[in-house]
Image (tube, helix red, strand yellow):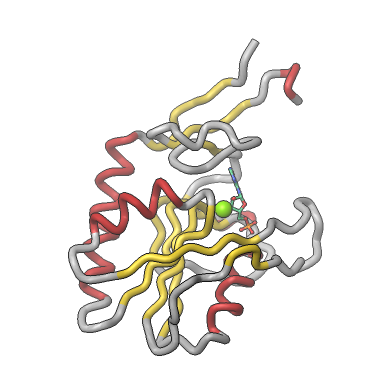
Length: 178
Ligand code: IMP
Ligand code: MG
């Protein structure tokens, strides 16, 4: 037997929504020095489509942070495994995430980034699970709000698998894999 995947957000829905987000971001960042910072690895599929939907000059950079132990109630601090290469002081940073779940990752990264004194730090996430928040953090740009389900595809993984799917699916593990 194998794991079951139900399509939650189709390729077409993703394409259309990312174009809308790109237009809004372009309007909001006119005259600014926009740096889109993707969080590895989950955001790579999203950021590659998003930047092509933002019709203005921008630069991209990446960060990688460790995940804190899941299932803890602590506001666990994430470790920075890879920092941005670019100088961001005075620039407008848009953090690009695959999903905001408890909010701990993005809250920590926002705080870390703010210390570099950019002109602004905002968050664009493809997916948002607001019902799971452990810390009060909001993304300024949200592709889709989703219920408390484990999702994969379009960059999101389960044990490093499924990132290459062109849709977002709900994953149900086969009994043997649990
Ligand atoms: P947070 O710190 O709890 O907000 O979690 C953020 C990270 O957990 C995301 O960047 C994902 O890597 C991972 N994550 C949370 N929910 C899911 C999911 O449903 N599928 C795959 N990864 C997830
Ligand atoms: Mg992630």
